[in-house]
Amino acid sequence: MSATSIRLVEPSDGPALAALLSRDRQTYARWLPARPPEYYTPEGQTSVVASLLASHGQGLAWPGVVVADGAVIGQVSISSILRGSFQKGFLGYWVSSSHQGLGHTSRAVGLALRIAEDELDLHRLEAHTQLENLASQAVLRKHGFSSWGIAHDHFYADGGWHDKVFWERKLTRRISS
Figure: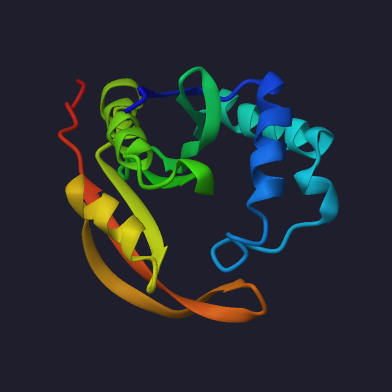
């Protein structure tokens, strides 16, 4: 079993992300929104990374990559961060198809939870899964998320609308005075 870590995405990750996304484009078509062809190029991903890092700089997101044996194998992010009386964010993640079933996704989610709590000082994380994505639902359950509803025809991908299961997890946020 290889070690899994996560870290903040870097501009130099663009080519690796492009290669993974391009290779898995058809495999994940059902789960991801349609993107223009440039999205799957090193330049396109370098531009996406720059945008993600700009959001991070504004305190709106923590965009990370999943790393195994020194190589980028996916992404994990905490986005749509709301402060004030909410103190919450939205968890998203994916791991390349060639690295699935090895525990990387679960370990990455566990590490992201620590960042949400310890670095971002969030009170709550939310996530969505498609109704049929049982593997992702199992990862969320393992990490203490509970489902709280289904949004019908919530997400358009692969030529059709898909239902989404909404998930939530309260974190043990320390209230600062």
